[in-house]
Image (cartoon, rainbow, N blue to C red; front, side):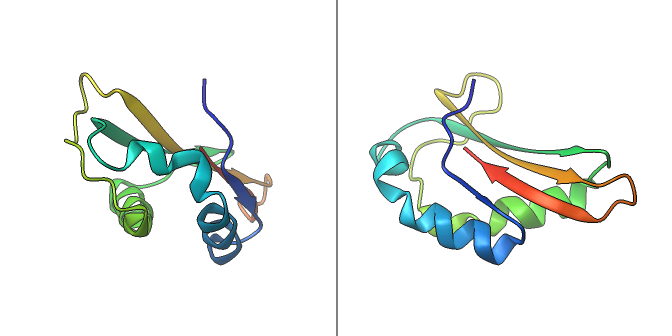
Length: 93
């Protein structure tokens, strides 16, 4: 289950809203072990693109350990595309 932080029709819009939602996620910044996932609906996302998306969230400033096996929190970015593979909406949480 994810807590909703932001949505947008572009990554620029998504990040703007996510920054405005800082009060929801800032409690995890200091020492929470975390991982980040990127998923697509109606499309697959290459590992290189997933890495780029994750790095674009670096402004969140999480200082805890990256722990893919035993994360205390999993952050996610979800791209929803039309059947034509045109990006429709992006969610983060």
